[in-house]
View: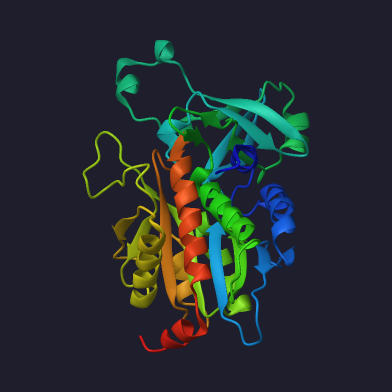
Length: 352
């Protein structure tokens, strides 16, 4: 099943887009025992290789899951030790008021996000929507100059949130978009250690997906795989969502279909799930924007691409919620697909 200790480390570690070094180190440490090589590239992607068996040429499979998370960035240091900030990635500022944060400066600095309390607001102000301009991080510092030295402009901050274990195998925390996908990537490579497979499997924890899908583009160009599978999250079911807006937790991974998904890979993933008895869902995806699948598909002269998503509630908040059963089933699906992959299938992908 899912190693909750590793999932906890992945979720709680900092890795705002463009500042992924700390979480990258955790990922590399976790991947080393199960791969033939692991390293970071020039841009910062973590690229691991698990070699297949048999002679060359072997199919080259890319599995990509982004490791970056949304976060905050300091824009100004004010008198009294207050930090003004902007957002990195798609942060809903309505969820920030009252949050505890960690400012990742010269050394880690705790803080809280505050705003003028309702008692001091006019009746009209109480009706206004909270905007980022009204929020600030209070670090407790009184000395502006000292704070500027510790947390200069450009310093990033993350929500301070521990992974919480809920009932029935569900967990909640920050950055599960997409550390959940990284956990699946790790689990897949771990399972492949004891299974014969002919493909060379490249597991990539990509950077900067939340701000432009940059790591997927560069890593795919470097590896030049025969096919690629992006592992990400999709919206889980919750009160207030229509049936076509969210996917139930505990019902297995959602296999994407749409213009950016190669139809033969889509069928092969469904067949693999049915062959080994894995529950799955179908996610219509008319546009490739928003996941690494887009970056994989357009690399070089084009790469046959698929998308597998893990249902997740409350996306881009500090209480993103997933089912560990879905993580396990997604891992099983990838292992079953890779185990059954043949060179003849890869050659057939050239005929779209």
